[in-house]
Length: 371
Image (cartoon, rainbow, N blue to C red; front, side, top):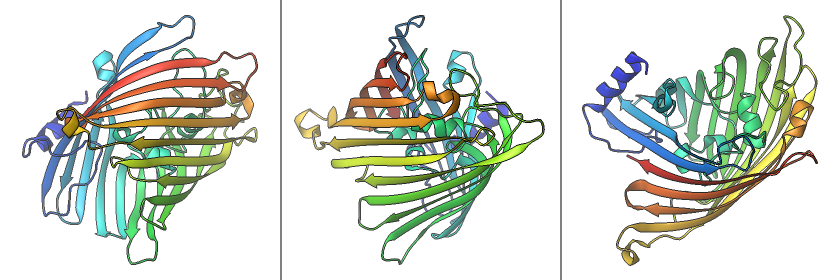
């Protein structure tokens, strides 16, 4: 792990015990505050692909976060991802930014954070209703909406500057974010100057209902062929040439995570897959869940809520991805315990669009602990 990152996290943790979830950047509006949190997800999964181990037990995410408020207007956040380090890899710096809040309606965020594109990407890892944001199958090529968005750097984290805020006093709730980004292509991809513009606006006409619209435009260069699909890239690059590609997303959110009752999400997106070959994509993903709470008194406080859920996603992509795209179905069940503990059970089934491609099946269970 990077020594300076470790020192920063340890120093931030010293003044206060763990007080809030690692996934929340909010440190309140006090004059000065430092909070420290974490997220651990241990996942067991299977695969039906030949040549792969039939079962796997892995640390999916191991995150430490430090949130600091220097003044009522200035705060910051550092988050490290340590899951790869547990298997001999290197630690990653997931997020590192400063936020200047001029007012509730106007803030400036500088550093590495999430791009404002789509409700699926805006959902933090600890709050995902399904175990994964998209199709993740060992030993198989499976591409649905989120996989395309992340690999093309339309979604995911990046270094940049954003203007964002919540506008008060309007007949409908209004939140927005817009920024310029230059960073990695995909959340774990290589560095590339993509010169990206991205913006998202969301309105809430009634409590518990959100409607969002997002647009993005970025540069694709000769030295940055997307590493997608079984053929490895979407097309050859003319020497020295740069072209720009765009995408647009519409999303709908219903209900509130963590509260009893119905909650769900629906996202549709379309855009440029490769501006050098004029390949395009479109996709849709949605999930729906119903949470039954108030179980603590009947179970001695061990099980506090149960939540059946279902997720359906699909993508249609041109070029080499045409053989890897398809339809994803995920039924599942979430069991919530005391102390922010969760056990999630999912069955992922992926039907590729190619007639001769194998249907992929994976069963997953994941234990999640926040502190």
